[in-house]
Image 1: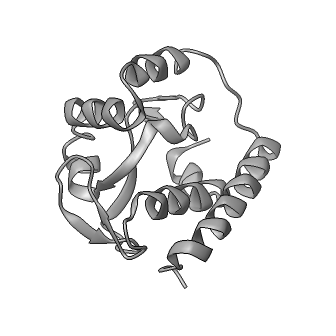
Image 2 (image 1 turned 180 degrees about the vertical axis):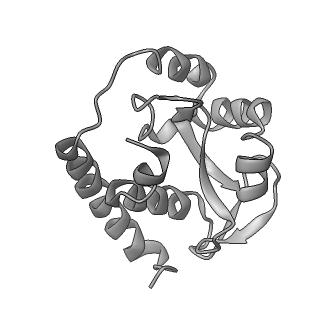
Image 3 (image 1 turned 135 degrees about the vertical axis):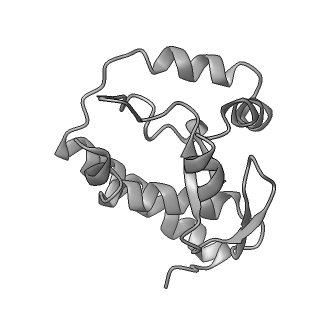
Length: 143
């Protein structure tokens, strides 16, 4: 699967929206985990940045693609133009999810994982439900 296909899946849509909404304080704004700037949740410049990249050159790594601990809100500039600002991202992941999480994610990323249609459907269903539950508390800026 190519990156252009991956980021258009329903699974990614629900997963990334859930993550952004989860990290927002008020259901409206979310803070970039590496720059500290605030953006509207539905701002196209706001991404879910992966610490351990899903796509790296000609290879792909799906074992941590949907691991909630591996993503944090990140603005386009930090995620794309600064390559994810990896050192700051590592520190943020360990601060939020506990010391050693970065190391665990790196180890997990070495495991082979097949991302097929069935798995994507299951992930989409799981995160759609989590997103819907969170919308009840924080609202839905993507309406």
